[in-house]
Length: 83
Image 1: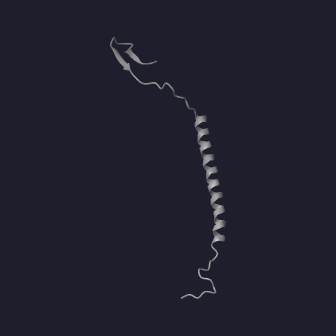
Image 2: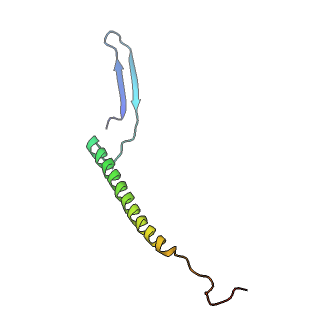
Image 3: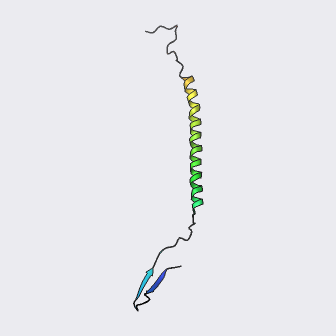
């Protein structure tokens, strides 16, 4: 724990200076290094690409259904007269 009061003295002089240090240390922190961060970024990019492919495949199937459903429908039967 580096908190406390520190004394600083110059080698050629008799003057002293004090410095009081206070800071909070994280009790439950995890140190994250460069390979961990790069792994997280790569996993995020891969997950995003897989999600984009899944959305593309799902919406691609809907286009086929729309073309079949776009056939013309007669609103009035041919044997009925429109008045």
